[in-house]
Length: 272
Image (cartoon, rainbow, N blue to C red; front, side, top):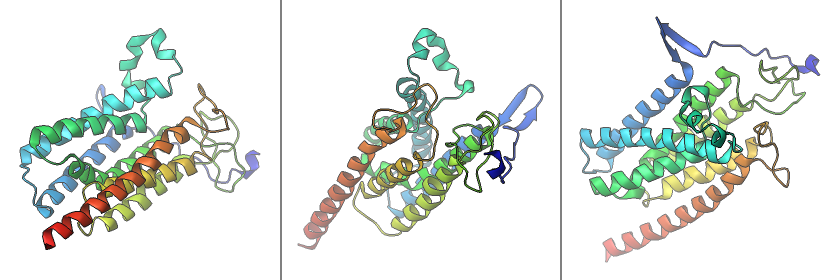
């Protein structure tokens, strides 16, 4: 099957920059770009939506978001993908440098952080979620590109012309599923979210579209992505990523319908 692997894996060094004993990895840069973009988006929509948030407030929101994503992402991976191995050596839970982050756990973490900051700053929770929803695809894009650079989370064995042989994936060519996710969850979703954000919508509609579309794209790409080795396929030949994405579809539809109903009621009230 290796004859079909006409695309060579670029084998980029995961370390972007070395400064003496310190190493700056592309994965860390991906997180940095994502949060700087989120900072800019929050500042932009604070002015556009005339929210009572100061620069210090936005900085506090970003700090809470970082903590929520890292803590939630790590705990989510431990619970959903760890297959019990972390309970044998609990201290390895804190070994973030060894990898292992879950998007769904990170989403839960950042939502909890959003609830806390919304109450503290007296800003509607769903308004904060909507701002984050516009910026989130940038994080999906940079994160999946970093996965590709690290040669991890590769796809299933395939004979498509663009299949690649990943160093850690054995001799068989595989789908570069990280790039599929970068395209759909990153580029395509970012374009859709930015287009949707051009006009004001009911609180929660933007985040509703984000979680709905992410769920659709993730479920689709999981058909090409190799399941985590410690879990394999779940009953029904499903993957953990697909199972965890199903509630996102339900939540997304509910948020969109709820936001539109509330927005229509608000506009009728303003016109009476």
